[in-house]
Length: 212
Image (cartoon, rainbow, N blue to C red; front, side):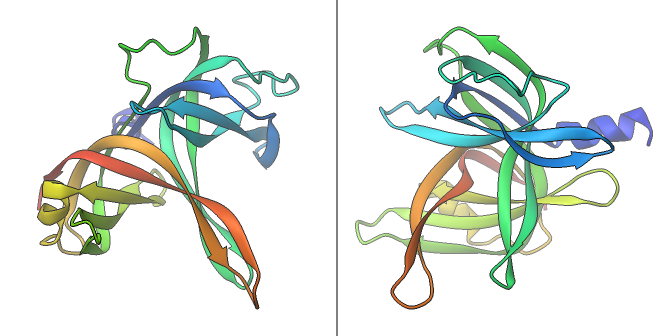
């Protein structure tokens, strides 16, 4: 693939997070002999709460045999999705794919610790609704192209004016999105009376542009 085209695919999906490593490395998969591992990074929000974001890191970028819990790390890369087959259906699994990592001091309040830019396409009709308290929310699923004909499918959530704006978006439309990655716990009802606590990841949109 030509460098320029490859660079374009990198530029349409850009993530930068700074946070504390809060788990050990867990082996995920191997590609051409290169092992990839998942680690959880806890990122502070402006409020007192935090987001716990899974990061996929190559063993070539970091010593995955070490326990780095409590260390602060800066990760730049892309927000990626893949389908994991479970319970007879596919589940969309999201993580930050690390291109560069560096250890850092604890978060500096003046530095943005969680930002993402996506350039992609609407792949199903946005769902616009109002909460009982009158807040406007819209859920979108955006497909971002990757090299070799692949795409990442990224759930996005908009609020207020942005949510209203998305209610007119059509499938296939081209959008650019700026925001942050957030984690959200929810309860998944299983068979019978069973329920399981799960975590969903999505992009909380601060700014978006419709390119048609």
